[in-house]
Length: 219
Image (cartoon, rainbow, N blue to C red; front, side, top):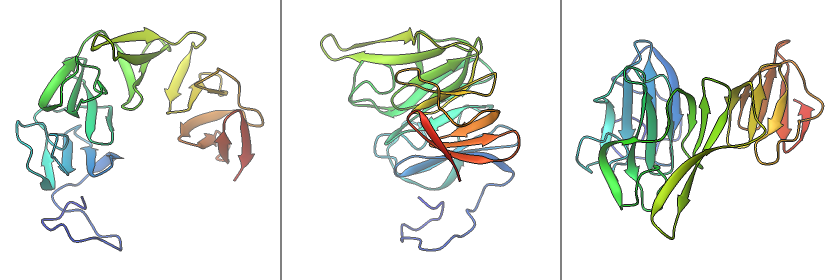
């Protein structure tokens, strides 16, 4: 949603009402999440699985509304679900569609109220799908769902240490090198990286590289 009280398609940028001092924003398929400088988290958009608010209802949220749990430093909006870290308690919560166990909770159709994800502590960053977690000690973990017995498990991905940031496909090490998340191959042609986003790396000299697999090219 565009944060307005109507569902008309928006073809040009307009200011989203009811929120200000936003420092982080994350877009799902039909819903959005944002956090302000006071770490208050806001959700809005499609809510048929409870993904936009998690207040125990499935009515669409047409304008940004504050979430019941505040002080969330990290969150990720999936296709029709969301996961976030509650910085006060240090716990991970999920809300929305869980038909395939994507929230990391014993399988059910959906959760319209936040449910805690067990098995993880000291998490620094989360990627909602396919379920990657970066812990404060620099290790990377993954959520795996077992279709046979309808359970999930969380296990460390071997070969990674001193990781400071993750995306769906790459990890950034503390020495400024980037590796593929699938097979742990170093991305060639780029070093001194300070930040990565999906398919993009920013170096300490403010150069931007496009990264794909284990290769890179200067933009």
